[in-house]
Image 1 (cartoon, rainbow, N blue to C red):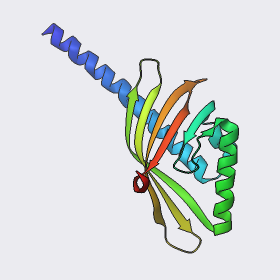
Image 2 (cartoon, one colour):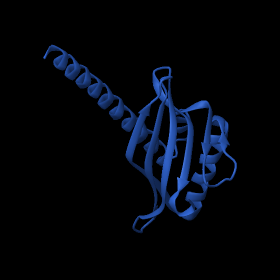
Image 3 (tube, rainbow, N blue to C red):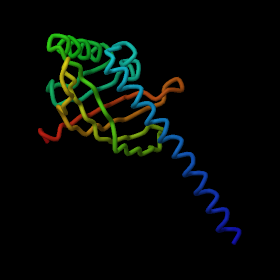
Length: 153
């Protein structure tokens, strides 16, 4: 009986730790996507490591490092302004896998939807987003992101 209680207590503690970590990662993504949708380029790129890699369906080459991320996001914001629309992101179905080195591998569904000025929102892309998150100076940051679109897979 004592062994069962110790085992149950240990499983409960591990479950509580994972639940706290999962909530922390959910909050990280909520924060990161809201910053992106607000076009706060510098704050958004600060959620990535200095040497981060972003693999997207387009462009064909990965976007590398924070300087590349800044250029990519600014160009996207300019396209949206010219089109008179706003792009928003939604993240769900999050899977978090802690790694032995302290990093996290995550996988989630991501929706990108457009909100045209004066019109209704519509889904543009349904994607899978796979990340490697690392803790830097006490904060989670994206070291590597791979986004695949369902319609191109």
